[in-house]
Image (tube, rainbow, N blue to C red):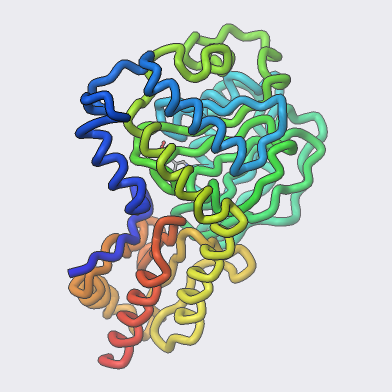
Length: 355
Ligand SMILES: *Cc1c(COP(=O)(O)O)cnc(C)c1O
């Protein structure tokens, strides 16, 4: 049976990425060797990381003065690297969910943290709008897409101080004005590659401004000065990332991806909004086009398990909601075809008709 992959992360990758990665596991760039066993210093791999770097810059129209890094440690390591490298006295954060909270917790190890707003009381069902970013903060950190709650900020905020963003779950789903940011980071396993690599975009001028000693591996300058090759980078995920980036370029870049993503999300949100049985959990104006969270209306609550079982029997994978929200979550990352969304909607309609 055809499987429809709605996992939140690691998550669906394009067939182009998977096929080319599988081929390279057997014979990488006609070396007669597997990508799993070649030196990261080989000219063939250098070509991979160089092209990946150039494509990230091209797709996101990154201006001069920024470096693109491919690092290990996941987005979670960036929660600490960001304040380690950028927090002099005070940083501003907005609390929009579990990931934002983890970033806040790490920043507090390095200085004052002003949490400008939080939607915790509402279980993060919306993104606060009425807040002031203090002009004396070193940076303002926010999470563009709250993977667990299905809320998203799709515009680069206006800010009196440089922005830092966790774009783990929506990078490459829209154009970004990178010039507003000192740093953007994204774990690859949501919209780009298998787990193991994190993309970091840093403004070179913003580095080297803190007085504290920084351990070598946690210092962005270590990596900017060596083109992400200070030590062995995650070779295989970077190879896969390159395949996805090529695929994104073939599709027409982030503007085209955004159109496709919005179309897919609309199909599912329309089905939820017109349903007698299902209801969305996120505030309409903050709904994510990447992660769609919904639950059973109270009068159908006892059918939740039955729906997951029915959907699973129809080939839907990974639609169970995160434990802190409950219900269902369908992740509609770039690689997910519109047909999968239509299949999920058909499944919802069939289940509704039966009950
Ligand atoms: C998944 C996720 C993370 C954590 O990523 P790791 O690579 O597992 O550390 C951080 N932030 C957001 C928004 C995420 O979706």
